[in-house]
Figure 1 (tube, chains in turn cyan, yellow):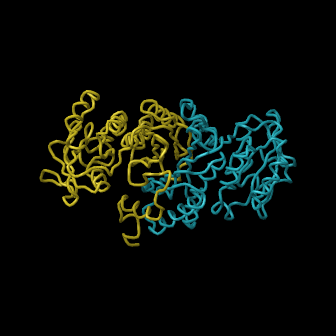
Figure 2 (figure 1 turned 180 degrees about the horizontal axis):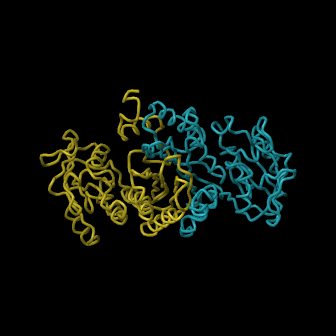
Length: 298
Length: 298
């Protein structure tokens, strides 16, 4: 088998793009389909969001991880995707594949962690399915559900040349614990949509070096990131801030004339959430660049 | 580890019930939570449905199965769940875990099968996620999505003592092919809800011997099934009709005074879909019974 004919030779983005080509274009009532943080469904005077997300043992958490934290993360990841459109979770369903040989107490902790995240950051857990894992496989968790935007959803495609790029919180070093315990930026995302500041938005789950190019591709822009502006978590390096992933912070673009207004009202409304301008949107022909010797986008 | 403390010792229904006890009761806007074919969300003058469903290689399909049929089945199972509430699919998202060593052409057939089912029986495929399967595991597919009811959803809980029990189509022998190629009873389910005939409804996916007790439990009734009335698929035996599962037919209850009206209007509106009265709802104290020597409910 050649590399081109198996999944080994393709990145996930390329594979999904190729497979999705077989699906019909989105149609009523769906107004945003694959390619953004969530799908968007017209729903009268509000917008409904639809999302599915999966976690795999050994990839998103280790076998010996505390199950309450795993449950929290499974729900918080989806809440973060809703936040990235300017919405919040509404109804959630969960599919879990469980190896049959582990103690029941683990699942009770897993479910309790999910319930805690839903209580803290929104969404009613309203159903799901529990199946045995395939022989030899560990835990797999798929969370799906609906969210709601009361202001027009902020897509990945709205950034324009000259817009400023911001991130919330800190980046890098997430594997030390943040990736299991983070609070999704639900209030901040809803606020950014309602106030009309964000021209494009997404959450940083795979790392800025992978996620920013996705926003740029959807918006058909380039971007320049300023290396010494990146807000580093604890002792993370710039390289870690670009590549580690699992930050679950919001990345968004803002028109330059709104900079002063955004920064002053943000400081007032979210005094405990750092907000950092990390760069600028450029012409698409400029591609992605980084002010510094090392190029995280290569 | 004792049986009681691991998953090996519990059925799926018991396990899910125990785990769900940790979740808060459903609350606005969710009006029906775990325990029915779908969750139900209040949505103005209509009702939205939410469902997630998983398929595992080796359990719901074999490794060498034609991938177009597997894709069709993954979507049709969810469409059947929406039909069982009297609704139809609206927006669907798909999570697929793929082993990295199989040819890309398989995934293209899988996606084409999903698109064909959506085109035939409703739902816009609007996103999802593709991940690598855990080492050693085969294909796993999780489909989630929303559906819509324009008439009040038919729950599992509405059957009363004296109501008549009906099934659509035929039962048993599904593994010969029906389980991969079936057409979900979407029109029939919507019609039953709109006409107000069905007091309770579900789809038969695990076999009548497992599914009827679930309807009875939710409705707090007993049931008596007449052995010689079961509509048998091809050469299936009564035992197969009770136990095989994967029929994806509708099981529903009807008030006895509506029998004549249901049967005549059904024959007119669905001349090609068999409709069979298979038994009667009884008092809960009567439990589940079967007119014949063999007891499929034990």
